[in-house]
Length: 238
Image 1 (cartoon, rainbow, N blue to C red):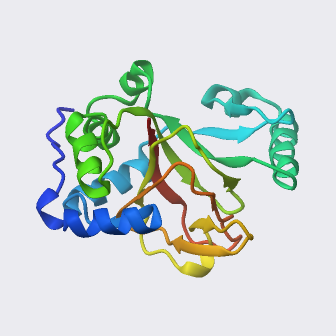
Image 2 (cartoon, rainbow, N blue to C red):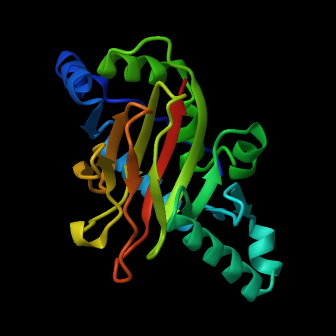
């Protein structure tokens, strides 16, 4: 199928000076509608229906782990369950995560996705200099270079515990989730030094959040009764 999608940022929709002031004060900003609405819907559909997800988690030693599509189909279910339990146990005392993932960093991963896939087009946009320039314009930062990019899907029970990324100048999440309810969980939560929640961002369609890498944050575990997965792409600039 020929790819006819070409994504363009809606740069004229934002007050750059206002966002720069907010970022300087809080270290985080949230932009609604950075893509045209129909394009955002197409990306949501592709994440929901057309993405060959892997399972991303932390192992019992505290290292990042990936259960590939092949492993998900071939491993004994009890072995997979043991690895999920290890990620949950690590979460009690430190950094851990559990969610669906698809790497958008390597050339091979992008080629496997296929250039007719809407998420391929989104990845191409995010890896472009235009996107880096846009992020610099809304934050006031300079010299941003994208280092990594991943698509994520969170299901009931999935989570990402509190963490920082001091090596990143800027981290971001571009959310493509439909019709979310705040009691379903899944918010990006920003934590104060005393442990209070300073702010939270609920999953929404076409919602781009940018935040300083050193901000303590987590993604709240999705409730057992959440009515749909939580989809996003997330990346880091150095």
